[in-house]
Image 1 (cartoon, rainbow, N blue to C red):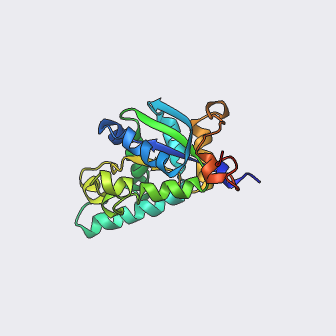
Image 2 (image 1 turned 90 degrees about the vertical axis):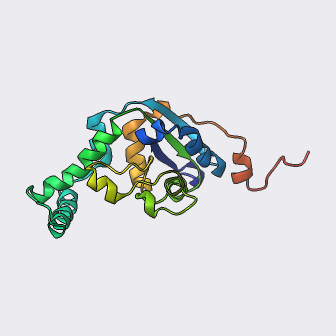
Image 3 (image 1 turned 135 degrees about the vertical axis):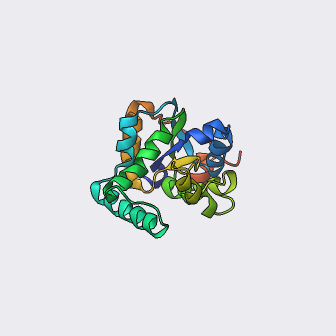
Length: 200
C-alpha cells in the first residue's frame, strides 16, 4: 500500500482564473498547506478529452436533464428538448468554457491531497462557498446567473472529487514521465517521525 503522503490530486485553473490573473494566488494557497507540486502544464485543453474528463453517462444526463426540464416548466419556460439533451447541455457548456482559453493544470501530492484541495477550493457554486475558500473569496458567480446567461458557472478551478477520480483524471492529462518524484525539504517537518536532524 502506498504511503498517505503519496496521494495525488488534479487541479485545473480554468480560463476565468487565468484571465483574472489569479494563478499565483491560487497556487500559493496550495503550497502553503505543504502539498507538493509534482507536475504542471499551461495551455489549451482538447475538447474530446474534456468530455472524457467529466466522465458522465446517460443515467447522469437523464437525471440532471429531467430536473432542468422540470425547473423550466415550473418557471413558465418551454421544455422542448428531451431531458437527456438538457443533461448533455450541462457538460457541453463546461466543455465550451474549458476550451475557450488557456488553463493551468497541475498535480499536487501529499497527505490526503484530495480532501485538502477540496476543502481549500470550496463548493462548486461560488456564492455558497465558505469565506476562506478559493471560490468563496475570489469570485461571485452563481448557478442562477449562469442559467440565465446559458453558460457554465465560472468558479475558477476544477479539483478531483475523490481518490478514484484523481487517479483517472491525472492519467488523462499527464503521463507518468511528466510527474516528477523529488524530495521537498519541508516534507521533513510534515512526515519525518522523529524530526531527525533538527538540532545541530
